[in-house]
Image 1 (cartoon, helix red, strand yellow):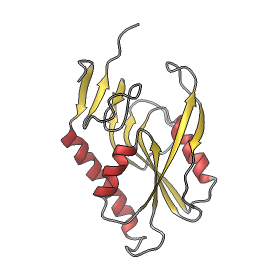
Image 2 (spheres, helix red, strand yellow; image 1 turned 60 degrees about the horizontal axis):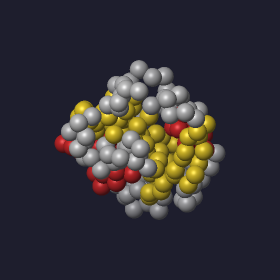
Image 3 (cartoon, one colour; image 1 turned 180 degrees about the vertical axis):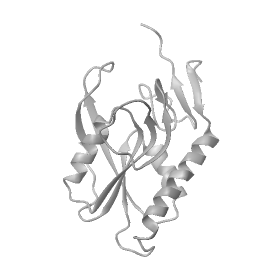
Length: 182
């Protein structure tokens, strides 16, 4: 493992945060979604960063859900805020008149989150909520995050599905990757 990684959440803490989020979602949907319904909520994971979190989340939830994925790409310089977000892999589920929860690994400035909310709202869901494992502190966000595990401060966050140049996704904890000074 790289000596540039500083742990901020251990795998055990990650597990506890996932359970907290799962319980919050269950509590919200228990009253409105009977277990045998033909239309359980649809969880839409944002690839690639949310796939590990989403897998653990659906295993921790004691309710039926439908699962789908969407993938986006952003354009712009990596050291500048990016505002243009394109959908590169669309969902395959019909979400019109369905309860939908978007699942993301981290919400930073919220450009991708807002693009996903706008895009999926156009498909006419009955409700649309946003779940992010991590939320960046001290940044004005455009999107309301309905379910979150923890706040994180500055730094490039990796692990638990999140990466730096496609590396470190498989780490069980959450780390800050300290990049070399240019």
